[in-house]
Image (cartoon, rainbow, N blue to C red):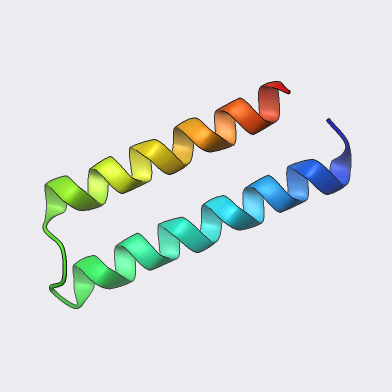
Length: 51
């Protein structure tokens, strides 16, 4: 994986994490839903890093 690919994967992860956290803080999602989103984003980041 190139450095550009890693940077893109990290950027996508951080955007998803920020969005999930923001929605939680605004009361649009509960803690379980937020954790599921974060777990999915982490798994996508791991997969991208392994490629």
